[in-house]
Image 1: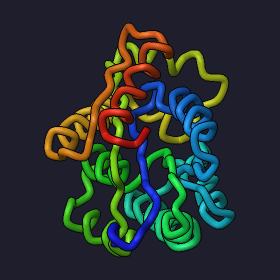
Image 2: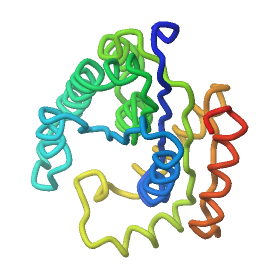
Image 3: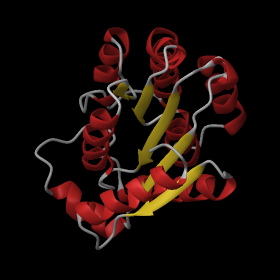
Amino acid sequence: MKNRLKGRLIVFEGGEGSGKSTQLEKIYAHMKRLNNKTVLLREPGGTAISEMIREVILNPANTAMSEKTELLLYIACRAQLVEEKLIPLLKSGYTVLLDRFYLATVVYQGYARGIDRQWIDSLNAYSLAGLKEDLTIIYDVSPAEAAKRMKKRAKSDRLDREAAGFHKKVRNGYLTEAGRSKNCAVVSTDKKSPGQVYAETLSILENRGVL
């Protein structure tokens, strides 16, 4: 599908406490100034329907949610976002900055939850309808640093509250997948200021021809 789309899809990934959201706000503000046809969306969410599903997925009260249900809810969110927002925006020449995408499902539901990769790949392919991203930037943080940052949060969702072992599997998943793809760039955020991480992110976007 990529050759039929005028716009660009840039995905930002990372585990809890990686600093991803902070960087996204900075990058979005910068790119919006350069090109008004830039939008920021998130997964799960991004549409009215997907945002409602997001509330169910991340609600800390939903401790009884099964792994299969969690996976299918994420896929449902993605399918709605792709059809309602991503494809129309990209066809219209927009640059879309996306907070998480299908790689998050591979990592969280695959590496961390242990769901069979074949099921995940099949469901992802169905929801994506041939859509491909132009670049994925993964923010990496050590477990110790992530734990420090998480303690400073005023609120935590259902995934934030997972055990340390879960988050270690998420990190390993991201790093493993990044090593297998030329379309991924990893930015370590340990012992770096937000400004330093921002500068590194801008450098990647410039080198990849996004800026």
